Length: 344
Image 1 (cartoon, rainbow, N blue to C red):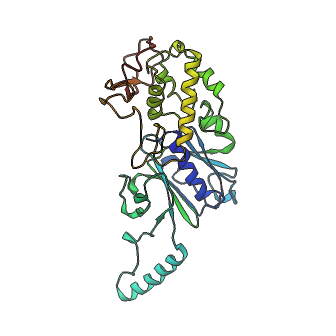
Image 2 (cartoon, rainbow, N blue to C red):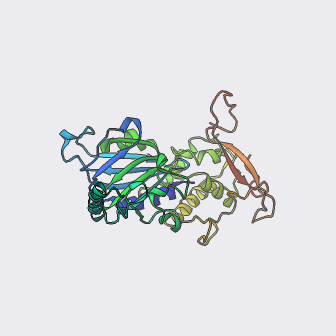
């Protein structure tokens, strides 16, 4: 599940592959950007902001030929639940191209297919380092396998002379002038828990401004602090013995500080790990958690069976009656009815 640490790793991968490189071409498969041409622009940087990915591009080299305008632009995307960016090396692109051209000429006279072509004539790819497994790293684009995201789920392609960066199932693909990033893309977010400008006091201030809201929903509100998702919500509340439905205002200042400080620590510990772990040592083979996903299993602290609960991330408070026609945003969480019983 993509959260702040996943987005951090995706940006690290994209930055290593794209920063300083000139785009040969682009293919943005969303209606509003379908005719956009980003070729000739240089990738200035790739920046995570909470759960948002910002790919910053230079000014256009020849504005008269580009519909996207001359000034520096930012390509925005969000992973939501199942999006991912992958980078494929264009191994031997120039040589392969020459061989295909020569093979095509030979085939036109002999009636045979050129040798060495990839499946359906596509260029063979080699995956560079990513946030997923080594097995997937060997998966060619044309195979359309591994994580169930085939070519039909591609929403963005950025091509340089050496790599293709491909966004599968990425959401909210937008292109805005870089000077308007805050105004149109991420200005509403709270302090970025993995950002260089992380501000604990500001995050606490924003949380305390909604004293009637359940701490479990307040932590997930990216306007309070950016980067926490359901995994870290469950783990942090379990580790601090906090009831997910406890009103923020009912928590002592020391408890609220403990919760946010622990979230900051856990995300930073996991930001460079391929597999998450919250139990004190790195994971091998699978993620390691105290409570997340362990429904109906004994609590590793007291032995009580963990419960499966539902929490509405859109609920404005723990006391206010919800409009029955309003859309609910229910998420499943695990919690211990013994260790996390107080506060409600």
